[in-house]
Each structure stands twice: as structure tokens, then as C-alpha cells.
Length: 484
Image 1 (cartoon, rainbow, N blue to C red):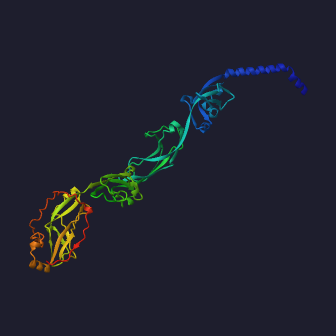
Image 2 (image 1 turned 90 degrees about the horizontal axis):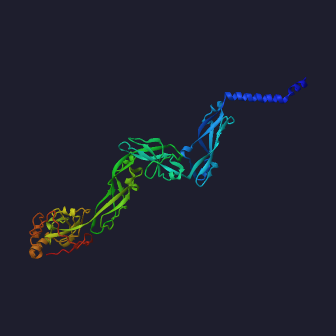
Image 3 (image 1 turned 60 degrees about the horizontal axis):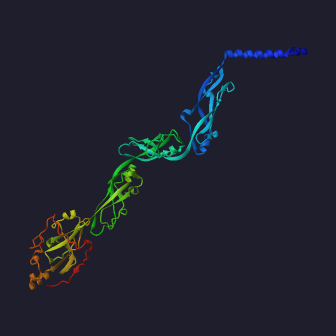
């Protein structure tokens, strides 16, 4: 029976196969009449692969803006093509296949279907994309914190930190090379306590203008800036100096410009500071004969924990004003001389009616001196009766005046000496000043022809023959008492 069935199936086999083929063809014709083939256009972005090959050669690549997308046509049955979208396709530019030429660089772009790849046909699956190559630059920058605004009154900005504080920038050399600084700004307006904030770093060129980061790759997008808010205080600058100017010259003033600075720090530290002192070893006036200036960096003389509110105030100009001293000679009546430590029962007679006192100083200071205000002092401690020569002492401010050595001759008489003197000697022969001896006991009484006191503003003719600092050191000359 099986043999009969086979005979039946194989009988007229050629005709049967032809009928089958005809049936399939007719089915396909019918299907095509219901679901025709259509052509549809898609536009998608080009995806780049193996970009590290270009970077490894220290190059970067760019494409024109209108070449970033690719447009292509797809053929297929309507039921298939209609349900597809751009996400079902991919356009890949493999940078490892870049072809470099003298005039242009070409990279092939392969378009592929991610779905229904066997049911659709992509026209012109391979395209060419022009690529521009340039030198690649990668550089690290330290991010600098910047404060915007001013803290509350009485407060200042202390230390500032950025975390993290380093930014790597890569991109075209012509762009990266224009970056001068990277800053992160934090707003401290009216702040009286420490502050922290997240900010976006800003790239600046040498002119302070913002650098466009469109073509750059940054290692960080956001950083944290922390600002310390501390107290502030304005204090004067005190200038000290060492040495002495040349002979006949004097330091008139030592000042700093600016005269005061604003410092900042913890309030308990600032409360103990009244001034910033420049040590005397920094400024040396030894042998100077004219005014001079010297730059000084204040930062090294600030106490620990204290800093300047503004860094530009760190460098100050110290001005040392030096002027030449003038010489005046004041003629002082001997009655103006005060006597110290005269023995009881003794009296003094001067051998002159007046004494010339040489004083050096600045013109304005000398103009303030008057003869009546000069009260020289004669120290006669330990001296016995007899003729003596000693140096007068003048109690003047040694910071303003230099007094020359003034020697005066005088005679000390005791009661016994007076008896011998009146009985045996004519006073007029011994004392060329006549009645000066009689008036010596009363310093307030006028002494005949003693020189008239000059007015306070009168300048005596200067004597340039001597210098107050070259005056001879006169030792006290004590003569043996002589009985007259």
C-alpha cells in the first residue's frame, strides 16, 4: 500500500512542482498588492568611535556643524519601514580608519540598521566625512578662590580654600594657550561668619575675559569654596631707625606712606595690637646728609596669626627727613646762671658780665629759644675757695638741641677770704667788672653793663668756626685757693 502511495505522489512530478511554483508566485503577487514597498528618509547624528587614536597622536579633530548629522533613504515593506525610527539606525565614524591627506582628512561613515536589518535596504550605506585636525593641548590649572562683595562692617575675609583645587583642561592648543587663570568666586556680602558654597570654575584670559569652554574638556564641573570671616582693625605704622646722620645733621621725621594699615585676624589677637613697628635695624641713617626713602615689606613684621587686609598694603615707603643744623650764639648774663652745691659761707664772683652759649639745632626750634629762657647751671660741688674754670650745663632737650662746650671762669670766696680781700686788696684791681662782685649775691639785681637779652625771634650771627660735636672735653680746672 505504501508503494502505491509513493507512485501516486511521484506521478507527473514535474507538473506538480510547476504548480507549486505558480502558487507561490501568485501568493507573493497578492501580498505585494496589499503591502507595497516604500522609501523613507531618516536623519541621525554621527557617532565617533576610537577617538583615543587621535588623542594619542596629540591631535584633536573637529567637523563642520552641518556635517554632524547624516541623512539616508531606507527601502522596505510599508509595515516594517513605517514602524522604524532614527533610533533604529546608527551612523559610525571609526577614527582609526581616518585617511589623512595634504588638503583634507576623510573618515568613512557606516550606516547600519539596528532592527529589521534583513527586511530593509539602506541606500548608500557608506559615506565620507571631512575632518579637521589640530594640535591637542592638555594643561592643569590651580583654581584660585575669589570673594565677591564685602563682609559685614568690622569683618574681613581670612583664609580661602578650594576643594578640589586643580583643574585639567584639554582641547585645541589655540584655545587652551589663552587661559591665564582659573577662578572660583564665592559671595561674602554682609557675612560675619565662615561660609562655604559650590560654584562653577571660570576660565579667564590675560585680559580677565571669560574663555569659551565649548571646544574644551574639563576634568571638573563644580568645586567647593570655603571662606573664613575674621575681624579687622586699622593701626598706625611706627618707624624706628638706627645710626646717626653726618655731623651737623639731624633726623627731623621718620614716617611711613601709608601711615596706617588695616590688619585682620582673630579678635583676641587684634585687641593686643596698637601699631605695627618697623625694627630699627631695617632703617639705617648712619652718615646720611639728606632725605631718603626706603621700601619696606610689612608682612615680615606682623604678629603671628595676623595678616594685612589687602596684600597691596604690604609694601610701604619709609621717608626719613634729614636737615642740617643751624648754629646760634646766645649771650646770657651771668646773673642767669644757677649755682649747684655751693658750700655754706661761700660766694661766687664771675670774671665776666656775660657768657656766650653756642647752640645747634633746627631753625624752627632755635627760633623758639630766648635768652631769658636759657638757665645755665654751674656745678661747684667739692670746690674750695679760689679761682676756677668749669663747663656750664644747659638743661635743654637733647633730641632737639646740641649745646657747645661753654667754659666760664669764676672765683669762690669764703668768709675768711672776704676779710683778707677787703683789707689788703682793691677790688677794682682784681675784678675788671667793677661792681659785679657786689651784685653776685643777688642774681635778680641788674649788673651794670651786662648784655641786653635778644628777642625770642632774633637770630644771632652764626659762627661756623666750631662744631658742637667736636667741642673739647674740658676737665674741671681747680686751682689752689689763693688768699688775696
